Length: 213
Picture (tube, one colour):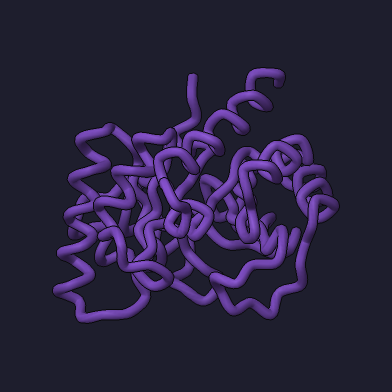
């Protein structure tokens, strides 16, 4: 049975590029093989955010791909998303679970083993772990974890790990071999000359490793 969490998460982006809408970018990523879409829009009027999220939700619904909303539980509820991805300063996981219900996918950013263990105790479905490598797409004071960090986390926490930050199709297999369940990417897709081709490269790299497990 394929995990509903998926191995290849693509975050939508309208900050670093304006060629594609959130929905178009989601559609291109799915065409290339993304099996989870995370809608991420930090800024803007609520009406605009909702409009964009509804459009992405339709794309994901039609493709039967889970949609996870970054941070915003209200948006997730409004568009009927599959779940949310929470940061350490967002709504506590237990409260999010009580609102969204037992079937919602809830991921949480957990850069440390204690944070990941707490996420597991509170019922998280996966953790976002990073930054695995340096990235320019997000200001982050958290130290770079590297493959050694992924391995340490995988050896200490029994919960799916999704590596994030600075990940390329060439690096993705090493992250999975180190123990991660999958990877999450944004600008590697949104800034690619052809997001479909870029997504397909990730998909093929991930599947090649997963098939050997």
